[in-house]
Amino acid sequence: MPSAIAIKQVPGKPGQVYYPLEKITIDTPTPGDNQVVISLTAAALNHRDLFIRQHLYPGTTFGVPLLADGVGIVTSTGSSAKKWLNKRVVLNPGKGWKDSPDGPEDPKGYAILGGTKTNPAGTLAEVVLMDESELEEAPEHLSDEEAAAFPLCGLTAWRALFVKSGNAKPGHNILITGIGGGVALMALSFAVAQGCNVFVTSGDQEKIHKAKELGAAGGVSYKEKGWEKKLQEILPPNRKWLDAIIDGAGGDVVSKGTRLLKAGGVISVYGMTISPKMDFLMGAVLRNIEVRGSTMGSRKEFADMVEFIKKKNMKPVVSRSVTGLDIEAIDGLFDDMKNSSQFGKLVVNIGKGSPSSKL
Image (tube, rainbow, N blue to C red; front, side):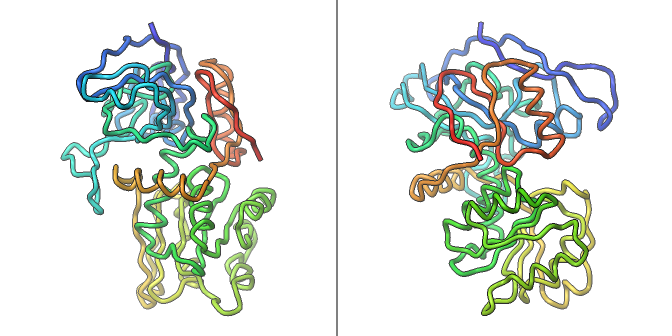
C-alpha cells in the first residue's frame, strides 16, 4: 500500500503543542470517471503546514497526508480523463472556488489539500487521487522540485499582486514585505516579470541582497528605525511613492505604509505573521488608502498563473530539498521554517525527479 506522512496526535493545547510526524499507509486509489491517480514526484511545505502541526489552523486533523503543493505523473485515469494519462501535472491546491473574483462559490468554503478535515487528500504521499478539473500540465522548463514549489504560494501571490492590488503595471512601485518566504518571492518574480519597480523589506541583509539578484530594485531592513524614510530615498526620482504594498506580516504596515503610498494606494494583505491585527489610522482614511485582504485564489486564477509562468519562463526559488518520506529529514525542513532561515521553498522529493538549482 502507498505511504504518506501525517501528524500524530499527542496531548497539548493549540499553540503549545507540536504534533510529531508519522508515516502512514493509505488506500490505493481507484479513479472514478473524471478522476486521475497521480504518482507524486515532489511536494513542498507552506506556513499553513507549520500551523497545522501547532494546531493553529482550522480543521486540523490526523490521518490525512500533509502538504498542498505537488507535482507528479498521472498513472491511471477514469474513462473520461484519459487525456491526462502519463502527463506530468501540477495540482490546484484547493477546491470549491471556480472563477468568482470575490471568493469561493462553494457554501462549504475553499477546501485546501493537506492535513485538515475539509479535504481527505494531501501531497506528502506516494500517490493522490484528484479530479481532472484541478490539474494543469507542469511547465516543461521546470524541474520537479521547481514545479512543486509554486502552486499554493504562487496562487496566493498572484491574487494579492494582480487581482487585489490592481497595480501590477510596468513602471509602478511595489513594496513586498518580509522577503524570503515562498509567497513574497513569487510576488517578487511576478512583479519583476511584469515590469514593476520592486522594493523589499527583510530583517536579514543577505535576503535583501538575494532579492536584488532576482530583480528587486532595492530593499531596507525593517529592524532599522525609520526604515520607511530610507525606502523613500531609494524610490525612483520621478516616482517618489509606492503604488501598492504586498504584505504578509500585518502589524504596523498601515501606519508605515500610509507615509509611503500614493493617495488611493493599496495594501494587499495575504497574511499576518507578526501580528493577527492591525490598526487602521485616520491618516490612511485621509489619503484614501485601501487595505484589502487576499487569500489563495480561484481555479481560473490558478490557470492564469501557470500560463504566465510558462510564458515568462519563470523559475520559483527552492531553498532546500530532501529526498524520500524520511521523517527526520522532513522535520529538518520544518525547523528551517520555524527559524525563518529559508530563502525560497522547502521541498520533498518523493519519486524520481530532476533537482533544481538553489540560491
